[in-house]
Length: 429
Image 1 (cartoon, rainbow, N blue to C red):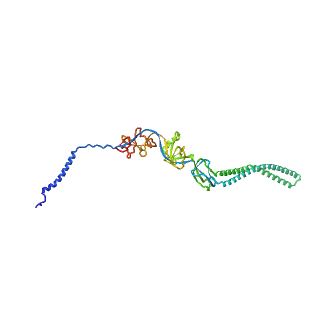
Image 2 (image 1 turned 120 degrees about the vertical axis):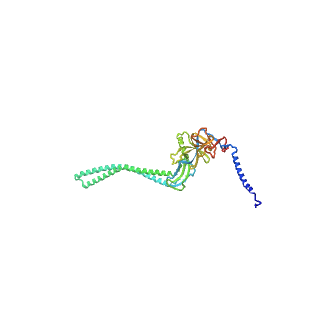
Image 3 (image 1 turned 135 degrees about the vertical axis):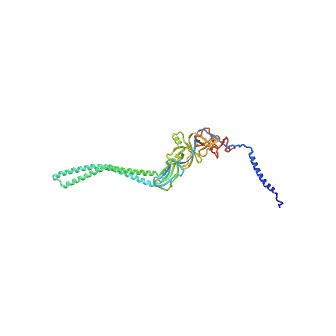
C-alpha cells in the first residue's frame, strides 16, 4: 500500500527534469545573445608623452673651466744648518715669523773657534818668518861662498909653494900633508856652500807652501768663526725651529727651515686630456692660462707658470705649477687648495644646463617627439648667465638647430615619447 505522503511517480520525474531544463535553456540563451550582440569598434589609447623643456643647439667659442686639486709648495725652502761643532747660543726667531734678507737668525758659541783662529794665526806668522829667514840665509850663503872660494885659492897657492920648496928639500913631508888636507877641507866647504845656494829655491818653495797651507787654515778658521752667525739668505718666513738654545750641534745638523715668500706656488695634476692644448698655449705665449682659488675666504688669482719635466709614471696627467698674481698675502706651504682652471678656448661647442647631462657624457636629442641618446665630449663648465653654471660639450653628431633635452627625466631612454613645452614640467599630461 502506498504511503499517504509519497508524491505520485509522474510528479517525481517533473521535479528532476525542471532544473535540467532551466540550465539548458540558460546556455542556449547565452550563446544566442553572444552571437547576436552589436560590434563595438576598439578605440586605441592615447600615447603617453612627457612634457619637457629643450634648448636649441648654437655653436659658440668659449673657455671651459675645470676644478683640480693642488698643494701650496715653495721651491725656495732652505734648511739652515750648523757649519761647525759648537753650542747654539741664540735663536732669535720663532715659527711663522717673517724675516728680511740678512737678518740675524741664530748664533753659535765662538769660544773654541776663537782659540783655533789664534793658533792658525800663529802658524801663519811662523811660516812667514821662515820665509824671511830663508832669504837672509841665501844672502849670507852668497857672501860666504865668495870668501870660501877666496880661501880655496889661498890654499891652492900655499900648496904650490910647498911643492916648490919640497923639490928643493926646503919643506918637510908633514907640511905638505897638512897643506893638502887644508886644501881638501876648503874645497868641501866651497861645495857645501854651492849646494846650499842651489837648494835655496827648493827650501823657499817649501816654506812658501807651508805659509800657503797655514794661510788657508787661517782663512778656514776665520770662515768658521764668521759662520757662527746665521743670517737669512732671502726675504721669507720661518717654517720650523729644529734646534734649541744650549744644544751642542755638529756640522750639518739643522737649526731652522725658512721658505722664500717670492717662490710660493701651487702644484697640481693636470688631466691628460688637456695637456696638448696647455702645451700649445704655453709655447705660443699668446694668452695667460689663469686659475683662481680661495684660502681662508680670500680669493687668489694664479697663472700657469710651467709643466713638470717628468710625469713620475703617472697615467692620469702631469704636474703643473701655478704662481700667485698680486696676492695681498701668501698662504702657508703644505695647504691643500682647489683650483678653478680656465681651459684654452674651444670652438664649435654647445653650452647646456647641468640637468641636460646624463651621467658623464650623454645627452638626449628630440627627434620627431622622441628622445635619441647621444654620446658627447664633456669639455668642462663655465659660469652661466641665468644658471649657476653651464656645461660645455661637443659632438660631431650635433647640428645647429637641434633640440636638446634640458629636463631631467628619471626614465630617460631612446624612443621615449615627449612633448616640448615652454614652461617647466616633467610629468605626463
